[in-house]
Image 1 (tube, rainbow over the protein chains, first blue to last red):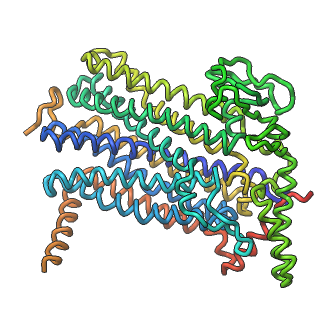
Image 2: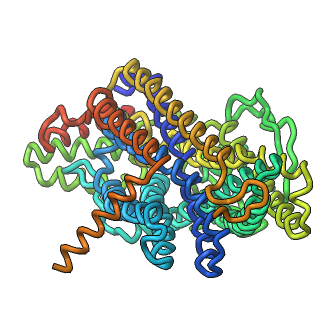
Image 3: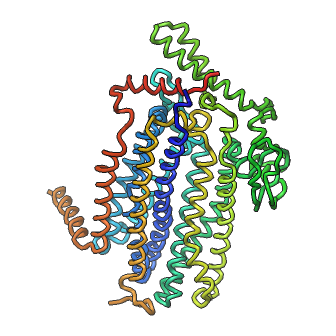
Amino acid sequence: MIENIDISLIDWSRAQFALTAMYHWLFVPLTLGLGIIQAIMETVYYRTGNEFWKKTAQFWMKLFGINFAIGIATGLILEFEFGTNWSNYSWFVGDIFGAPLAIEGILAFFMEATFVAVMYFGWGKVSKGFHLTSTWLTVGGATISALWILIANAWMQYPVGMHFNPDTVRNEMVDFGAVAFSPVAINKFLHTVLSAWIVGAIFVISISSWYLIRKRHKDMALASIKVAAIFGLVASILTLWTGDGSAYQVAQKQPMKLAAMEGLYKGDAGVGLVGIGIMNPAKVSYNDQVNPFLFKIEIPNMLSILAERDAKAYVPGIADLIEGGYPLKDGRLALSAQEKIARGQKAIQALADYRKAVKDKDQTAASFAKNTLEENFSYFGYGYVKNPTELIPSVKLTFYSFHIMVILGGYFILLFIVALIMEKKKTFGQKRWIQEVALWSLPLGYICGQAGWVVAEAGRQPWVIQDILPSNAAISQLSTSSVQATFFVFLIFFTLLLIADIGIMVKAVRKGPDGLNDSNDTINS
Amino acid sequence: MAKCISVVRIFNFYREGFRNMKLGKVLWLIILIKLFIIFFVLKLFFFPNFLKQFGSDANKQEHVSNELVERAITP
């Protein structure tokens, strides 16, 4: 029956989801990152009483407001897509996904909505302390909102805390703590939010550099650069740390993704980490004996350390994961893809047998089928896999996205350090080259975040839920043309929103901060 | 009485805030247009809930279980 699902329907549905998520992620990181920076600036105003900091904080709040207003509710469309394009998935995981999303909607949305009003309308009308609290709670609400979404996403990467009920054909949550505090969820939340802080810092440094190039608002620009560079450097170092944690979790829970991230086809002990590499286009199959790289520079043993915290540890490659037979940490031998497929088929057949037995009121057969299903459920999704090569994600896409993310992450650390040193030596305001570099680094912040999501999502294909549900089973029976049509509707809709966002933002930046003199940043009376 | 005064103060706080908005008015207009498009165009015409056509939860369960079983690769 699998032949009935048009491959182009899967591809278009995935493309549509990717498009929506990527556009949504253009707005979210700036909200999270700039939100913290403006709150820090207002805190400085609260502590010093210096009006300069109030005007500076208000200026960044204006840009925050533009981004917040244009970006708000763009994530809702993802939920529409679940219901229409991914209906089997939606039903299958309803109870697990529903709880975090409901909490996100109720708690975070109302928290943001309440305190945003005080943040914008409350200047001079509420006490300084209450206003500052509202500013922090606004960004706190946005961060909590991200937390629940990321918990839901992490569950798809590492499904825990649930039990599959064959009567309802749904996964039911049995341990909320296991879902909310899984190591994958914690690492994903920290790594993603910290990377958003970097985008906020890059944004502030970039816009401030534009003012320096134009010789406008020099004091405000340099003061903002100082705050953003310190904040960005701290965020970058923490991102590096959580990135290591994320990679470790990927190695434990999604070894195929790790192998694709590193272009590792054949596993070994003491494997090196590819620092820079160019993949070989002639490599078309995992077992074709063609060298996967035209060129690479490796850090010896580093991948083993990253994956297992042991320089001599064995890390399986793509071929090993397909063929199995390598020793696992518990002493057993890894199953091959074919063995997993057989167990997946057994699980699905058991589901069919169970439902038939229940209809026939045959309790003995139902009980037997249920036990078989439970024994094999962890391989359920493999029953939809025809050819083991379907289990390999796009290696080139995952490899390059991962390395772009890592290289840009390193570049940002360097940029923040240089900016801090030059700010301290009071040379940032004079040197045009660093201002140009900082200005043009703005798109790199977004590219880095998007690359990270490509690693996370493209790297886990074909799974919608790791090992349990692949995309060809999760998708609704729709016509490809209807998904194509909505893809282009979204493309136009989101592009218009982005144009509006950039247009209003550019206008606000050109106008500059209200109440500060354009040339010397004295307070206008 | 004190409760009533608080409600009036909150109402006035929001009313004044909205009245004094400059850029905010443009942003609110964009938000409202966007929400209209999302809920009254996209949701209604392009993104119906696929399983809704099956009516009851029992029928939805039946549909999804059939889909999951029939899409499997048979050995």
